[in-house]
Image (cartoon, rainbow, N blue to C red; front, side):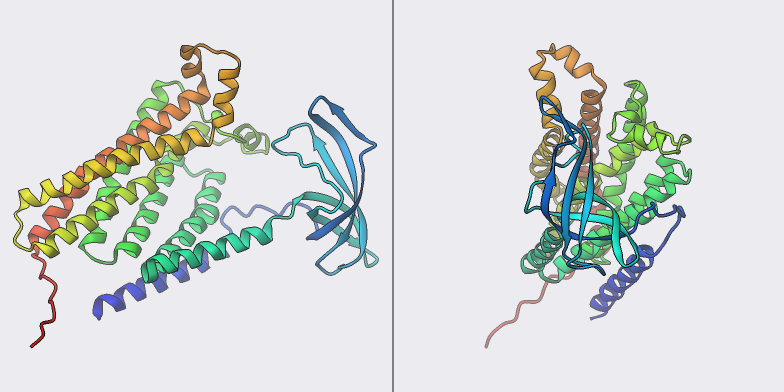
Length: 380
């Protein structure tokens, strides 16, 4: 009962902290100039000013819409859709589309309206709800705690980590502090305030510290700079010239693999916990051997997970290089590919190291305080 109360209190603290961080404004960045945002239905389009060169469209598309929400619902307004020629950023609308519109009001009427993309917020909300329901249905109370950890991680990155970098905090120490906080909250929230949670946290941190060290070493060895990341140059051109993009890249490496590291560490710690519960008299060496056997199997698939995750997010980049017939040496030596190789291999080092670390820590923790076997009710 005391354990349940501790976990409930811990979850309540995390929820309140998430709520506090949601309203926190560290960087004090002024809001972008704009106005009212609402959902709108495209009733007509004018493509006469659109310039088309093969598959690239530039200039402006004039769109007439009817507002579906907001203070000026059911009113109509002309919207300007700016086309920059970048397909990954531009959207081309057709009659009947539902889009997000931003406008200002003058004399009770919407004016100066600009298109902000197809309206996706409703589907995103439904997807989040479906995710939460499925998580609870599969994992029960543990799923709720995992969902709370998910929200906390998102808020920490959005409202704390990114703003701290913008105002000039050093990326690597700040990233280590953030990932330590996230690892502690996630491990103790899911694993409980128990030896299992402590072993998961300690094992994860050892793996992440190794990843951080290797990322620093090989990033400088590869002569890599942070501009290989998307939007890095745009960030500098936005006025943040003081940012150290290389250190931000290094921080992104160990933060990106932290989820896989925690996942593997939790698997090993839970296995070690169950082994000790079912076999309270198991020796230290045999306990470690059993944990390592599980760790070997899980590590094999987890390293492949990192390979598929990083490679899958850059499919088109690899296809471009292959379509141009680049030699393998040229392909592997390009900054973008070298950055992904560094991501995959350095992250895999952390994943591989976390298994024996967690096994050793778990074995020592359970050795110091034997676990009482679970009582089984008997019938007379």
